[in-house]
Image 1 (cartoon, helix red, strand yellow):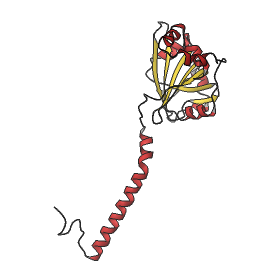
Image 2 (cartoon, rainbow, N blue to C red; image 1 turned 180 degrees about the horizontal axis):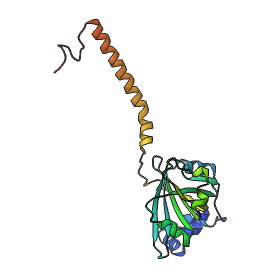
Image 3 (tube, rainbow, N blue to C red; image 1 turned 180 degrees about the vertical axis):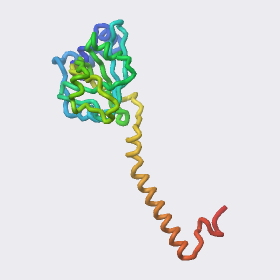
Image 4 (cartoon, rainbow, N blue to C red; image 1 turned 90 degrees about the horizontal axis):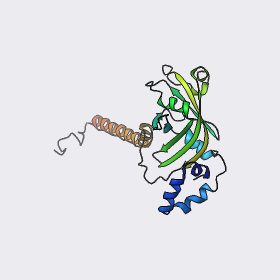
Length: 219
C-alpha cells in the first residue's frame, strides 16, 4: 500500500480500530512513508488500459455517498499521464447524480477490478469536469456509436492509489474472454467434424456401410 493512500483513509477512529485488532503496527509504516501524491508505474498504466469497467463513489451535499458503475470497451479509461486519468460521460438516464455531487465536492474514490486475475486497484482523486462543448472536440474520447453523444469528460487527478488483497475476488469472465479460451477447442472440434465427414464420404464411395449406420450398428 502506497503511504499516500493510508494517510487519506486512516482517520483517527480507523487507527484506533487497527490498534484494537492488531493491525496498526503493519499499517503504520505505510502512512509514515507518505510523500504527497502517488504516480502510476507502467504496471498500473497497463492495468488501467485493459479495464472495461469500474466503480466510482462520490458524496452529495446531504452527506450520503453514491456509488456508480461505469463500463465501456476495454481502454475507455484513458491514462493521460502518470497522475491523471479520464473518461467520457455519455448520455444516459439523465439523473446526473455523480455529476451533481462532483460539482460541490470534487473528491472521488474508484475501484477497478480484474476478475479473471483476481486483482483490484483503488484510486483516490479530484475531478475536473470538461463540458460538452469542449468534450466534443476531444478526438480520443469519441464513441464508436455516434448515436451516443459525449456530454462531458471527467478528468481525475490521482492523489493516491492502492492494491487490494485478491483473496475474496470471485473470478468472472467476459464473453470475449470465454471465447478466447474456447477458440482452440472449437477449432479442434471443427477439424474433427471435417475429418469425420471425409471418412463418411470415403466409406460411401467404397460401397461399404458406415459402422454407425450399418446393420452391425449398436442399438
